[in-house]
Image (cartoon, rainbow, N blue to C red; front, side, top):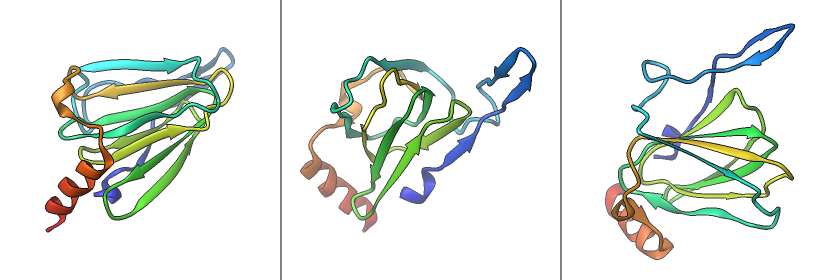
Amino acid sequence: MLNSCIITQLPKFTDRRGDLTFIQNGPQLPFKIERIYYLYDVPAAAERGGHAHRNLHQLIIALSGSFEVRLYDGNQSRTYTLNKPYEALYVCPMIWRELYNFSSGSVTLVLASSLYDETDYIRNIDEYNLIAGQIRK
């Protein structure tokens, strides 16, 4: 499952006026965007995430600054440093994620495949490990 989570290069156009990157529904995305949210003013020592989603797909982007994302599939983990606004980390369903080590002034943009649904969350790591283990069988 973890191999499905990849860094995607977003289109980047540069001219004398600056850079422009866009994201739109279509072949650029592995899902249709239904929700957008962003994190900001996150204290450096704080952690976000600490959960998995049963069905939700996400793209995570560092619009400004940097942070790290640790992904875990119940078997192995991988850590990504996000610090470029033209790169996005695709996170598929059933992947535990933790965001941490936020730089001062960082802004995190998340594009999600569905509206907020509390029943889609798995917030307990032991429950997650049990479910992920059943999926791997």
